[in-house]
Length: 138
Image 1 (spheres, one colour):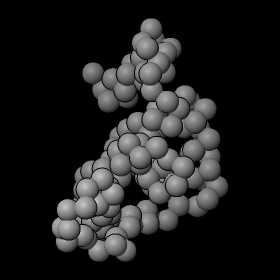
Image 2 (cartoon, rainbow, N blue to C red):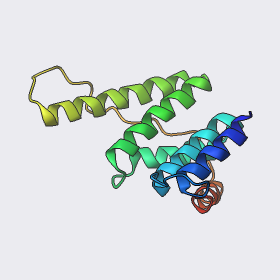
Image 3 (tube, rainbow, N blue to C red):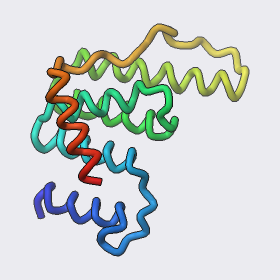
């Protein structure tokens, strides 16, 4: 079974089109589609779209952290080791901040300035078209 057909079946289950529970939000489904597209087609628009989900302030923390980890794996799979390393630093900084928020353990935090590296540049029109397609597919 190809990645495309397997993911299509899963997406129809997640979105409720295939008799599933439909327990996945539109944002989560967009993240999954972008992850599939980034791996299957090497789409730079999909990576840029996932980057937006990871840095948006209104994003659910679980979705944000999932997007960050997915970005790490996409960069690693593409052998973009600098972006993968910087993404890992941002993930650890998020984890450290959450830990400090929940417990004052006094551990040494990572660099507070750690942030996700910018994705490969994509024209805004191509990114907008990709995001519109990804959202309308849900």
